[in-house]
Length: 183
Image (cartoon, rainbow, N blue to C red):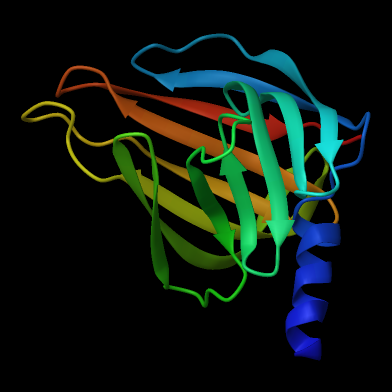
């Protein structure tokens, strides 16, 4: 029981360090068929609900607004504050390298796989981060690939890198890349 409590505390402090007023600057760029110049986007903690454990964050990894929380089971995300809103686990505390889990947001089911610990560049330094890969459950249209992506969680920092690849027309795709700027 103490090990579970310790893991939950480590997840809260390490992989989801969110406090009121915190902000992060991500460099965001589309690469592939629809390449765009890099732009900076500032994500910010808007509010916290200590009773429920949810923290509202704005401009976070493509979401205008989302809610995040850390618990003994992992890091969860939801897109709506209302009770009964769909919740998805984006980092599973008990997962071992190669293990998969699923979750749904609306009509789409996502499959997540823990790929293990990797070195990720953050500015001029390299940090150790847990790599989680995900993909949507089904093709949107015949011949189109499902949306897929990767997220890297660094202890004490949070999400340091993420990328989402979307199929555009059966032959081309675009990848949106988020890289956290060092603070």
